[in-house]
Length: 111
Length: 112
Image (cartoon, rainbow over all chains, first blue to last red; front, side, top):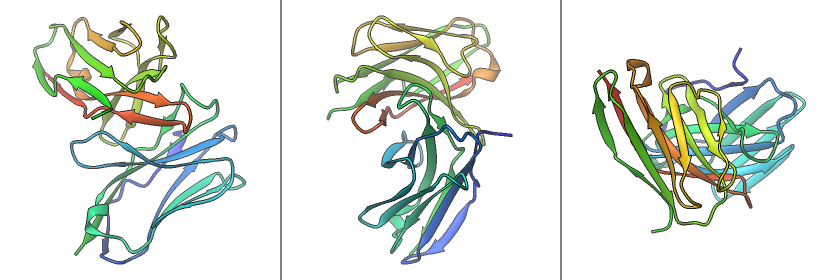
């Protein structure tokens, strides 16, 4: 079993839809949770990071962590075609050096 | 623009050939990393350097060596390339203030 599981998709939604992307994990020691966005043939870029449980909002993006269920989510409101990318979850327990990445979910937002 | 610069962007090697992937960052970050990305596998850590002068193995170090030349530069060497090393390689540095990596644009390596 992988430490971090992420549905690879692809997920296809119409413009303006609310998108929900999710990851589950097995290591209860994870404390830091990140979401990265990766456009085709580019490196991943950090979208959001949260520490421990709770919600964090940044514009159209909301990250949610439920440590009791070992489940994290990224919500995208009012999705745009420019949001079409692969979204990677990532997590770690030491604050650096040993980050575990999910395999990524491919998202397509249709105009 | 500030960031992580990787060279080359593309490379084709024959089995048994050697090469070095170069990486440099200009953000004054202490930690630098080499990852490989394969379909369905996500990003896997090859080696990392927590600070200038130190390097450590990651999840998949076999067949690779690294050198932290100075604070800015961290290179990855394949001594004898194998088809299993066909992958996209990313260099990254860590912003310790927000636990966020800054990644380079990647090197697409094919070993035939």
